[in-house]
Image (cartoon, rainbow, N blue to C red):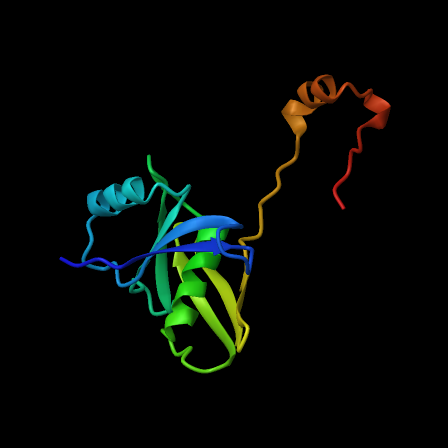
Length: 158
């Protein structure tokens, strides 16, 4: 089996700078163990594996592996993956323009927009909205850790 692996430096236009990530396109035939072994061999903090979606609500699916384990989401490796797709003209990005995608992840389906022009591609990643819970039972612990008094603690949600 022939596997094409790219290393992309995210967040930069200068070679050998930025935040490196491995990218493997067309990874559907790979097992979890093979993805983990590839990530270990690549040696970047994360390697992104681009797969076909398992739901019609998404255009593609991405899984991320560190050299030690799979992670649920990785921003810089996502940027690297979409940069690689744009660079190769994949996923309908053969020409310049703005392209919108729905990416399936372990963290849910997330929006991604790619602006591609003659200079390259800029990737915008939407993230899941965090869920906040009341501090309630942990209020005294938070106050102790932050070294604040009861009067300084705000008691309402905005």
